[in-house]
Amino acid sequence: MVSNNRVSVLLSTYNRADFIGVALDSILGQSKPPDQVVVINDGSTDRTVEVIEKYLDQVTYLEQENGGKASALNNAMPLIDGDFLWIFDDDDIAFPYALEILSRALSENADAAFAYGGYIAVKDKGYGALEKLKEVPPLELTDDEFLSRLMYGDFLGTPGMLFRTSAMRSVGLFDTALMRCQDYDMKLRLARRYRVVRVDSYLFKRRYHDQGLRGGKNSPFSMRDFGAVALQYEGILFEKVRDNFGLIDFLPGRPVNREGHSTVTGIRRREALFQRMRVMAVHGLWEYAVDDLSAAIDNLLESGAPPLSSAEKWCCHDAMSDVFSTTNLLEKNRHTVHRIRLLCRQEGAAAVILELSKGLAYVRPRLCRSSPDPGSKMARYFRRIACNLRIYWAIVRWLGIKGLLQGARAKFIPPTRGLG
Image: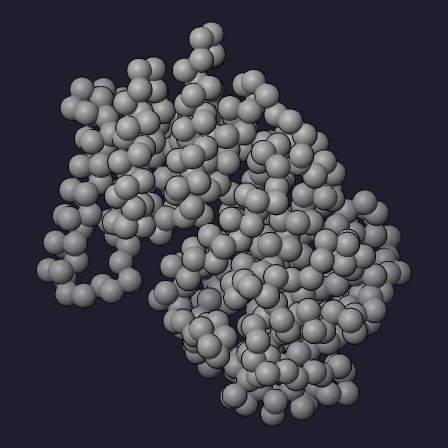
């Protein structure tokens, strides 16, 4: 089936003169050509204008003072006249069949807000040379588990997605307070309200490179700082999610199209609290995570309450899985570490702290390898020793010597993954 829907492309760019020409060539060379291509220059100071001049007969071109990607996309949205919208990045490369596959899938699923596929990660070696890093296939998820999995982490490459324009307009504009994660925010709002459709194809090459600074003119950062900056804006985003989404939205098995204000009670409420705890933790919001952990433990300690399920155990384990978030917890949030210890000293809560400790032990090798400043070989060696000691000390404080020995006998093997 060939889609007859009109397709628009929107590309925001900032100081990507070396890459934007290749990106535009890949968009304009599609087997199903787009009906409209809008390029908005977000105040570039390099040769971007010179490069785009070659395409002015094929694209609609806008300029603005540097205000960030969200601002640029919002300013261009009134010009978009397509039924479907493809938001592309200025440093990535589309495969020639991408738009044809995505538009067909979205046409055949009239109730879906977007279609998504996979991508191939490549490293830019300079002078047009690309080295393949890995294939990232699209996750295969049921409708009712998609949102809860997306909350845990953004696994969707935006250039590998095609949006239904009317659905995007129904959930509002991009949040200009988010210099990063503005597209993640949009995906969450859409997935909360609508179905989505997966296509089993690799649709673009995601280019990893060290050329130029990320961010806007007033908040630049290097690729070395990407993880820390991303965690900062994820924190801003998920404070908003916590305020605006209901507890039911964090549950796998949540009905599609329910916007989250139904009451969740009993064991389902406890599971939802563990799920939200996991989400808050991996996005660096540890105070909120411990609030949810406290409420979940209260439920666990009620008379007749069932023991931790495999899904709840996995939530505790996964809460420790993000390197940047867990590093911040151990290095900068001693009060929160102490709160966790006091919570889990309660009689009957030992299973919770054991699973948290398993997660911490499991992520330890990655934590102790990561460092924004490699330094000398000797400095790295002592930094890893200090990291290991800090982690084991946290585990000892949480578990006690007896609990540590029990965990060691269990080899800190993570639990079987539960739903979500």
